[in-house]
Every structure is written in C-alpha cells, then in structure tokens.
Length: 254
Image: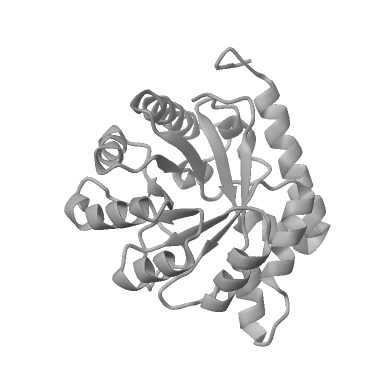
C-alpha cells in the first residue's frame, strides 16, 4: 500500500468560518475549492458540524455537484449526518468525534469503545458505495477495531505531534508512534491518512512516513493564505509533500 505519490486533501471549513462571521456570501468556500484544485490539491475536505458553525448544507450541495475533485465529508456519527451522507453520496466520509463546546476536533474517535454504535454507519455507508474513513489516535487497538468494523481507511490524528516542542523527546516519541501506527495500518490492509494541526514546520516528517498515502490539512492553509494568498500557500505545501515523498526509497525515508 506504500505509494510514491502522497495525496493532499485541503479542508476549506475556515473559509466558511470567515464568511459566517459577517454573513452573506463572501468568501466563498466553492471558490476556495477551485483554487485548491489549481494549486495541486487532490481532494477537498469539509466538516459539516451539527451546529453548522462553518460549512453549511448548501455548501455540501455545491461542492458535491460542482467541483471536479473528490469530496471528503467529515461528520459526526449521528442519524442526521448519516441521512445527509446517504442523500448526497460524497465519494468519501470521515467519521470524527464531535463536541459542541470544542473549538476544533479534539483527539480521535474511540472506535473500540463505540464499535456497536458505529457498525450500522459502516454498513450503510459501505452499501451506498461511500468510502469510509475513521479519524483515530495512532493506537493499535483503534486500528484493529477499524479493521474489524470494515472501514477501508483510517486517518491518524497528528495533533499531539504538532503540539509538542520542536526537537523535544516528546515530539520524537509522537512521530515514532505515528510511524508505527501507519505501518500497522498497512499491515492490516487499511489505507492510512493523517491530519490535524499540520503546517509548513511540521508536515515534512509526516509526509516522509511511507505508509501514509494522504494528508488532510486545513486551518493552517487558510490562516497562512491571509498573508501569502491561498494558491501560493497550497502550492508551497504541495511542494513540501512532493519533496518529502521523493526522499522515500524502498519504503524508507532517506
């Protein structure tokens, strides 16, 4: 499953956050998706939260029906969100934990503890031809639960790694844990993605993990775009991913 190509998914949630702060139609998440495609993105990610704090139902309609890139719909495991996914039929759905009080997704989904509750989601999404991904901590028990559930993809939470101090032993341990989890996912036959908190200063070691085939990045790109422009920011990230993966030879980072 190790691949020389590393896909970049661009999360456009916070374009909608800025729009919603003022109301109206500007800035337009659909335009952001089009710019992302031009800059080298391989897919678009959007999180439809229960409180609709950024992406809206109409955004999902437009993204699903307008852009050429595949849409990865992030959502909580609720009946409402399942119905929306089955109505819109995005190419991919990523189930994430969701707490109305949190500012952003905090940590991974506990698949092992919620196995029975998640089973009908896996069954119905799979039957509809939607590729299911589970956003999880880089832990063996979660990967094996995802495999047992029948999810073809896991996305490893990189937030712990990103929040550690540069050069610290904690960062080294977090990076090693992600590498071990990605390899275990590959051994289980799971496609491995990763994301959360990644930026220019943190992405290259993650991009160099050969078992990871896709990174999903959003908040940093939208924030940096304020200063450098969205197309230039995504293009720079794309180059960092390409350079890191070019240094992977025979499944090892060199």
